[in-house]
Amino acid sequence: MLTPQNTCLIVIDIQEKLFDVMAESESVQRNSLVLIEMAKALGIEILWCQQVPRILGPTIEPLVGVLGELHPFDKTSFSCCGDAVFTEKLKELNPKTAIICGIETHVCVYQTARDLLKKGVGVHVIADATTSRTTDNKQIALNRMRQEGVTISSTEMCLFELLADSKHKKFRELAKLIK
Image (cartoon, rainbow, N blue to C red):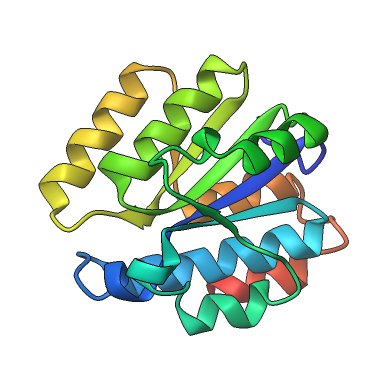
């Protein structure tokens, strides 16, 4: 069960040049924004990564608008865990669980999830907040991650699991994000 304590959100490579060629990109943008707003409201640490931004461009503007006070981890490795600065921050946070959104599901999301599992971190990949250029690649990656021990979830499921109760002080504020 997800709880806001000892959980982090990892936002992976939702960048200009990648975003435009992805299947389901608008849904990924919308749901990633919900996840970021949710994490901020619940005090969940956010780790924001970009794959070689000088080539693939920066993170798309709507996300930068809500991530603005954070600094991205710029990486060359497909797995976020291949970046020493990211890995050091992860070690410092020592999360029990990581929630992941981003692109591409079958490359950077998959490899990050796999490496987090190796580090003993539970992983929840938010299926409606990840994508690939083809839906086939996305589905293959989600199936493989499930087989390897990743929890596959949705934005709404994640939100309500973290809230746990309609009496939660942030319930009304966060429920509006999905209406």
